[in-house]
Length: 207
Image (cartoon, rainbow, N blue to C red; front, side):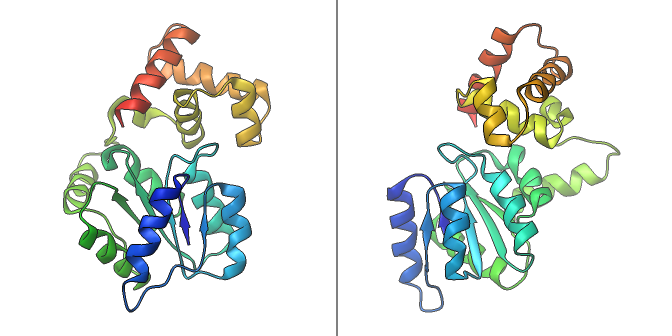
C-alpha cells in the first residue's frame, strides 16, 4: 500500500513497483482515513509519506503498528532523515528513505524491509551510532528536546493549521494544544506566538 497525498507520486511509485516481478501494489491512499480503509486489501507493507495534506504521517505509522503488528512499514519522505528518521523508527516504522534517493535504492529498501530488516541510509546508520556513544545526545539539536506530540504540533503549525484544527487532527482539546505550544516555546526559547509561527513555517519549509 502506498500512502501519499500527491497522485503523481502514488501513480509513479505504483508503476515502478509493479514492474518488479516480486512486488505488487494492491492499494493506494492519500490520507490517514483512506489508508485505514484501504487496509481491507491486506497489504504486506505500507509505504507512508510524513506530510500528508491534512494529517501527520507518523500518527498513521503509530496507528498501523498498533492495529497491524506484523505489517512492514517504510517511511518515504522529502524531509531530512537527520530530523525524522529516528522519530519514524520510534513511531513503529521499519525504515526511512528520502524521496531524492535513486530508484534502485527505493526498491532495495522495500525488499529489505519486507525481509524483516531495518532500513536506513549508511549516513543515518553512522549518525545514530555516533549518537549512542554520547549519553543523552539528541541527533536533531534543540528540536530533539520536544516530545513526540510537541514535535507533531510544531510540524502542523508549520503547515499552517490553527490551534483548533490541530486539536481536531490530533484528537486533543484546544487547551491541551495550547499547553503543547507553551512547552515548545519554552524549550526552543521562543517568546511569542507569532515568533513560534514564523519559526515553525521556516523550519517546515527547510525540511
